[in-house]
Length: 97
Image (cartoon, rainbow, N blue to C red; front, side):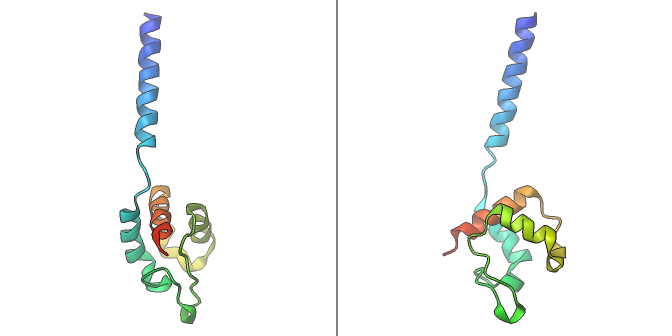
């Protein structure tokens, strides 16, 4: 009985680990988020808008994005992005040249 329970527990943990690992970053979702929430200040291609004092954010990492969102009063409208949305946004920004 204990062996059966142990096997079930191990299989359950492996399934949960595989499910969370399978959620890769999605640049397409990040693009939608960028266009809806970021482009008006940072430009259509994340090149920045000097007149608005908005820097280029091309290639920024998820950590960089989250740090800016959480520390800057300019980013009040995007403070509610989930960690997954931030990672998707970073994946999109990484595709920009």
